[in-house]
Image (cartoon, rainbow, N blue to C red; front, top):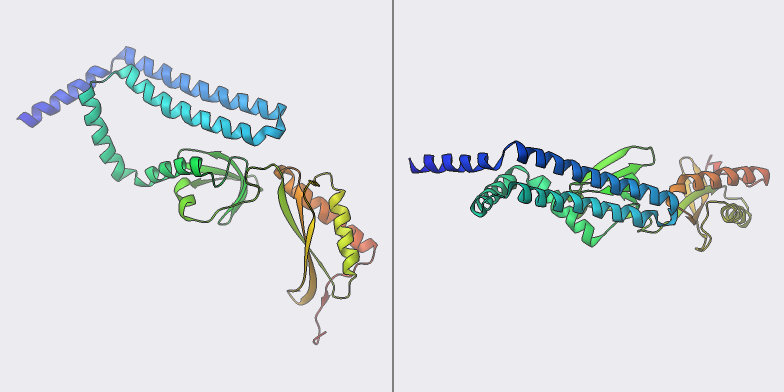
Length: 274
């Protein structure tokens, strides 16, 4: 009978916390939090258009501000508007923690992992990363997941917890410029020095190239299907990661044309051990 009476008292305490006025305040408060976050994101987009060189810094700042608005604002709103008794807060917090621990353990793991990512910073908003079969630019680091915009314009959502145990590679590590590797294959009897010079000439004259960092090459013989070829691997930096594929396409298009124009031999099919 005592347990039944305590349950009735607890329910009565909960019901006393809510009335029409309180519900309206909660709705207004949630709307204000959403409006604040929307305003911060809009301000960030405007700043990125005016100061594109600080795009990554602005993205990181707006992400942190949005995180703080929702977490701190929600807690302050619930405590400030509802003003529940201390005993009720402690009891509710304990019960909620136990329930969430069992029902949302994967989500909690992602939340903890999200905090670790913010402090450990293996990558940042704006980085080009490779994670498993996914390659693209990080557009947001949220409480639960990281969102990656692929080069095919797909938005991929990856739970934060996966980044704690799996390998992730960042191509630019917070910098605007990034190394772009492009392979060219020529025949064994081709003039390798001339081919190398053509590639370097095309790269340094590309409007997308970042010339404050060097252009380097790795040259070796490789089998390509039924062909034996010499691979010239050009390593150069693009001015901004957003121009990665434009840079690579520009280089490949012009190098291919110059190879044809200057008679640089392409790989020859192997026949009878040739």
